[in-house]
Length: 359
Length: 260
Image (cartoon, rainbow over all chains, first blue to last red):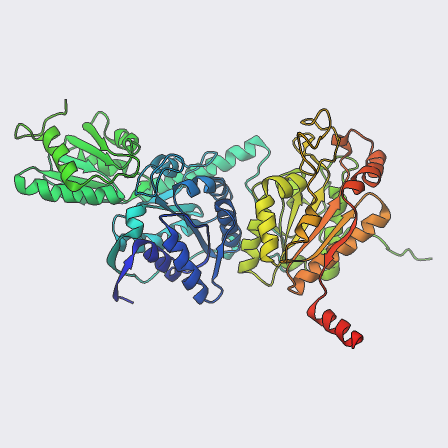
């Protein structure tokens, strides 16, 4: 189907998931992702074998997903920041047991109960694993409704390919926003039966576990996961370059803040200020090499976040020693305007008609 | 006279020596489960969820498909499995801390939703694997490593009576408390396990079998004393018997016909 439809972000994720073959959703209401939960309650049940459960807790939801996914079903849960904190136990177990699943985080202001405004304060939690133990989750950060549809489908493929939990990281604005979208044709699923727990039948029974009491066995399991993560880092980075070819200053931003950055660039360019945008689409693996390569031409980078400097750690790993790195961000659920960002960039880099190191 | 084989290892029980302490009830419960799998011929369609606790390694003994669960989340994992594979026999095997403390929400709501799963609940009144700390089912006055003066209602509250509590939930169909401290009780436990699994096969909703189980190591008793303590003390807090058994529609019909 190539028909263009107008839908809100949360609904798009739900629809894309169902089209990708997701047949199990468990979740707990939390703003600003309720529309996704509601959408699934209606539409996943229209599918043959489709199951929706409003769980008693976020923890129960992610564990139900573990159970459903272990049978070989495509399964997902969604929440917003405080709820994702609760799910971390289950995400760690999914990573340990190598079970594919999709976890959607529609971020809101924090820490604590925070507020229900859009924020990017969960970057560390998402990209550093989040739960206990040495593991990573693939983190996809859409910046348009179209990308929410595409990346939701891709997330299931990536989860299957690497047998690992994948997180779709967006924020309250992305969840609520409406844009036209075309749902692509999902790829046929390729997931071997041998990983599905469906009863032993007449054969040998098997079990799925993360418990390895022998420390050398656990170490080997960790190395095995690490080798997998190394392959993901090599193969799966994604990013967008926006007017970076001739840029004197490149903003590094993802998700909603990347949209704000584009708005700022559109204001600055006509005034002769050559500003571009580097937008990581995968936050883990972070497109480290791609960003570093930009420093061959551009010497000034501004990390811009709706948080207090989290992604800047990755930006520094990519650029420290190669270029000047600045930061601008506002935490707590504030979405800076393109005008505000444009003014910051103009003042810091262009006040003497040329890029200048911020003082 | 030719020899006749009258007792053997159940086919569903793996040929592995149990790691459980001498006198522990887990090995008996495992064996009973496996006998039930054999008798109902469900080894190939059973999927189990062992707990975090002493029975975490249950998959080393039960020769059925199993998936590890986080502490207390067994009924949530089992829910996910059962909803995707309604024709499989799905069970969780849980201890008292797992079910009645950290996992009470998952157990309670799986029961309340009437998930068509079987829960086997081993109650030994302590946290066994971690070394004998107080459990939600520790009896009044019982000394543990975290209730050194004995459990008091002022400081620790009363032991949680899981069967009584869950029998009030309308999603549950069959709930029985058993024990594995005497041969007679072991036979009753076996019957309860069979009944629970049969109810699931008949799609009758949530069933739970609580099994009072000796833990000589953490009770600091001999195995014989531990079995006696179940009769003398535990069953006073946790009376044995069927707490709930809702007859099937067919049985109900039979009763109605009889009454008419």
